[in-house]
Length: 443
Image 1 (cartoon, rainbow, N blue to C red):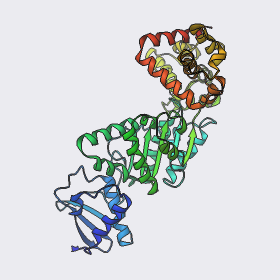
Image 2 (cartoon, rainbow, N blue to C red):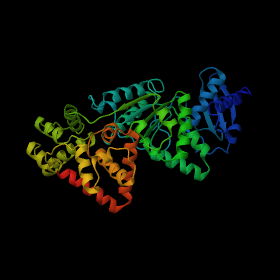
Image 3 (cartoon, rainbow, N blue to C red):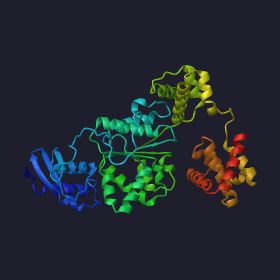
Image 4 (cartoon, one colour):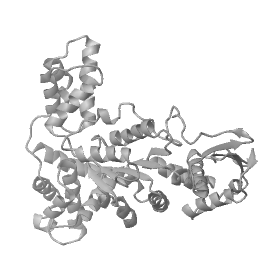
């Protein structure tokens, strides 16, 4: 074993420092020793001061790339601790957790592209997720998927993970919820390990974060995520985000983040149509090695028209009921099992009907609610109307705002969030809103 060229390690550290200018190079990293095993094989011996937790797989991957840039050719780089080989080769076999780095939610083995049922409601989201898994960092970056609960956001994000682990086993990837990102950042601050946190997240090849709307009101975490996003984007590393709202509708989040979320592709998943629901029911049953009678499939797709998760729940209930009672799956068993999910038919709820119920409670006129008046006696009932309109109808923020005097979508969003908080905090106010809601539903 021969010592490598004296300046080579420093050149690699310079490349690393240039890519992440706001991150200090740890002292222990400057004390590492570089040896040349042969023309294409280098060994990095890390000092005793380097704890195993400090030398993350993502950091090793970044050092590997920095050495290749310094040398100008592809290399095999071996990392050692105390003279013992301690790190993956450049293209390792996948571990039981695959290429996911750090703490992450377990991947559902069924959440792969092959099990995702496509239809008009989600075809664009499916195609873009597939493209990202084929060309991470180059197809759509970032990819931002938004949808209501249970429509398949997590399925697509985990499908990206599964495919990348299969096709690129050496990928440095992290998949986690935004809440986990926030909690890890808070823990890093408390422990004085912010630099380590930054190395962990800024040397990735792929970062996938679920429910990014959780960043709302968290100013310091937003600042940290802004720089993390910039570091990954500038290095052409893939970022995938999901939310329950499109970027411009996420409240109390910095405009510069909203702008970056829209740099790539923003796609929406809608509620599935009847035809798509039929296909989902069939798929969920077949994944459990069951073929449901056609009338059962159509019945489930008719009575459960909300989201994919509830469709799957209905299939599981029917299969479970049949198994436990040792009965044949037929339409009678299905109706019996799902009777609590079948609501009596009712007329569609309108914004006007909601406004009428609120007017009766607050003794104001519709013209007041649609006016520019901001007095509390008018503003509060108007905000309750907006909150219930979003809760009880499928109207968009823009449509609700248009009904109430052409107000901007951000005004409606503010009202929705404000009344939601008041309902949670004040039992008396919650009772008032629930009474209005009950009145509307019974009409």
